[in-house]
Length: 317
Image 1 (cartoon, rainbow, N blue to C red):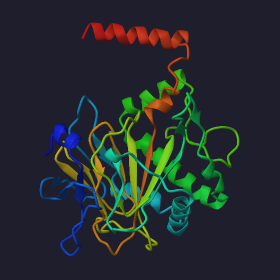
Image 2: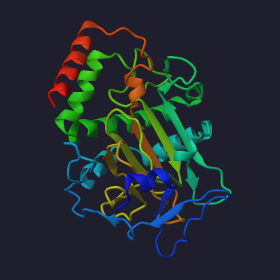
Image 3: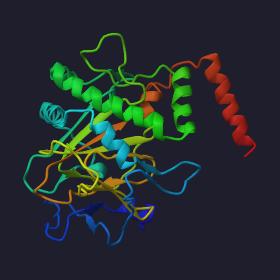
């Protein structure tokens, strides 16, 4: 188990490779602490496909929830995996995204172009605005958007089915008080398409150093495997989702859904086998989006009452 101080002061990455897979190496000029999954961090798993996986509450909230595999496979069974992978690949070709050094994206194949893309609602860095979407998203064809829409709606169905009532209630009441945006397809008509999530990130054969995110609610990550037309209960693990301060890593198999608290330090390991192409989809809602990215907006009467109630409760704590 790593401390929060260690995570802040070091670039910590996790190697999810098996014994027959070469260890990952840092790019030139990068110093990182590489930890093999299962050595300094334990592996938590549940092999019964009817049972999900979670952990003890932190501040009265679950740190993560892996959806029962049987449930995930039922959802995946309703889709055409070839269309899903084709849509994700098309997305990745539209734009190459970059992140800060603290959350830099790595590939386990030195010299290969990093395949990672973020799309959806975007907070402007130069103004007090929240943009509906990046311009490049308009270049995605309708049939690819249909597949992306299926991924997002299926994730939101899981969100409503699996998460604690207070998690769903929080975002429901926030939406009633603040008219924040959620992700919409450029080809859709009549407003937002999705109820909860504002953006989607897609990566192929990438991994991240440990970090936290300023997201408003539980984020979700889902794994896909290229070249496979059907996922099964006993599929091999393709990647690990790690929580270093909790001392655990969660195996992800193709099709798995994992909800997680983005305020807890977390990261994605390198893929388990170099012979596989693993695509990870992450859906999230930025706190800045919910706050409308503008502190100069006057509060409504209802919002002012909530602020007063919040301060009153804190004074009595």
